[in-house]
Image 1 (cartoon, rainbow, N blue to C red):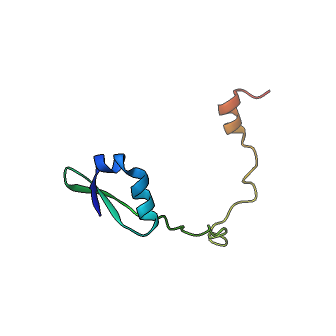
Image 2 (cartoon, one colour):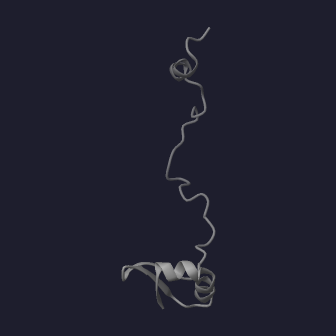
Image 3 (tube, rainbow, N blue to C red):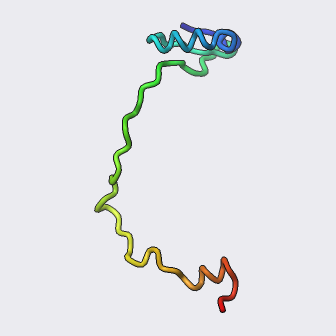
Length: 77
């Protein structure tokens, strides 16, 4: 189904319901297609640990650095 953007504004709930039930709706402006309104498809859960073994974080990663401390807080006592 192809609808103008003004018609889509006026009938948004109806169009969303139609998309939910499988209808593909193309919204146009000046007869040029802008977007397709389709049902949402979940992408799945994120997989944690994708970079495990591929990067190396040094043991001193969380150690304080005197130069950086001075930049943020000024001359240390």
